[in-house]
Each structure stands twice: as C-alpha cells, then as structure tokens.
Amino acid sequence: MPVHRIRSGDDTFRAAIDAMTDTRQRQEFAWRTIPAPSRMAPSTWACTGEIVVHDEELASGRLVILHDPAGQEAWDGTYRMVALVQAQLEPEFAIESMLGDVAWSWVTESLELHDAEARELGCTATRVVSQSYGALASRASTVDVEMRVSWTPEPRELPAPREPSEEVAVPGSSTTPEGPVAAATRPPSSAANVGGRAVADGPEGPDGDVEPEIDLAPHFAAWTAMLAAAGGLPPAPPRIAPIAPTHVARAPRPAEEGEAR
Image: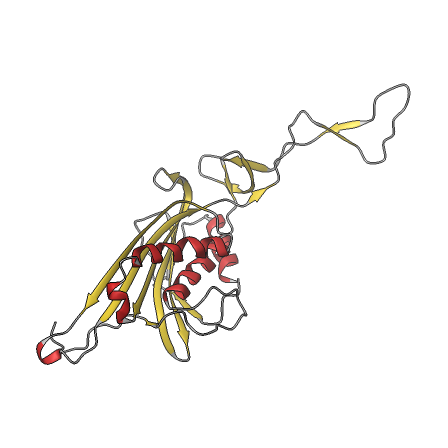
C-alpha cells in the first residue's frame, strides 16, 4: 500500500515533497511517512513525527500536505498544511488559564522563526485534564494539550518582473549621434503574479495556468518547531543541541489495558 497519494502527472507536488524531505531537521526530531488521506485533495502526503530527548518522547504529531492544482476557495491557494501537535504537560498547567494563548504563540512564533509565510492560518487548542479518584487516587493528575493547525503556504517570492514595454540595452551596443542606443525588448517574464507579487513558475496546471512554485521546507520545519515548543524545548535551528526544556512534557500515552476509565 503506498504511503502517499500523488496524482499521475503531478510533478509539481512530487518535486516539492522531494525537496522538503531532503532538508535537514533538528536532531531531536524523528519522522516517518504514513498512508495519506485520499478524499481531501487530488494529491496528498502525510507523516508522523516525534520530539525525543534522552530516549524520552516529549511530543508527537502528524502532518498532512494537500495539493489541488485547481485550488480550493477555502484554502486561498493550491496547497494546504494540516498539522496535529500533542504533548502531556506537568500538572501545573491544569490551572493555567492562558494555555490556549500559549499554544497559539507556539504556532505563530514557529512559522515566523522559519520564515514560513502563511495565510488562512487557523488553530484549535484543546486541554484535557485527567484526575483519578478512589482506588486510583494515588495516580498523578495529567494535562494533555492537542493543537490542530492548518494554513496555506505562500508561493516563493521573486523580484517584480519588468514591464514588457521596458527596453533593455543589448550588451556590446553603443550610443551614436545618428540614433538611439541599440535596445531589445525584454522577453515575456517567466514569473507569475500572485497577490501583487512575482513568484516562480511551476508546471502548467490542468487549465493551462502556470502554477506558482512552492518551497515547503520552511513549513515542515515550522511544524517541527511547534512540536518542540509543546515538548518544552526552546526554538533552535537544525544542528544546534537543545538546552534544558522550558517545561516538563511527554507525548500522550494510551490508557493501559484493564485500567478503569
């Protein structure tokens, strides 16, 4: 069974995923591909990831990348990132009324840290407090946080193209009294314009429109930064060893068989 679903001929998506997965990530992050959903977009890719320090799993999550060359109105683009971040925090967070705001800051600061420009950004943060009673009263309380985040990555920005009417001097030409400087009209630009910005062109879409080129690596790194923040690690670029966690966290564990619920 394939672990990804890439529509035949969707070379734009395949190239974007290959470039993204070839990018080096921070050393505490481990990931693997998983079967991708089939009904959310023509082409999809998915993986799970964990933040592990000293053999302790601090946070875990899932990332799904969707691609529809025709675009979707709700996305405001042709790509969509859908991320899940989960961690188990120390009991003190049970009374932290601002935990939702803190979780939201993990999202926005992670995107900013990696220059991952995004639009249509949304997040739902859920806090679950588990406290045991009776025969299980000796068990410590636990606080699980779950963040569901989605955003549309911006196309790669390029310098604005020259207007077609502008003239560019031909190398080696000279000015003479009898005539103007030899010039040639600049060939049509190979950059598309999205939202008033010039962006690199990718292969043509199904309707003949040129699809902007997307660099997904910063967005993948931003998701790993969200996991690291939920796991208590400070922001750190790849190849930088982490310092002491800012808070104690571990990935949520499923309830053991036979436990009272």
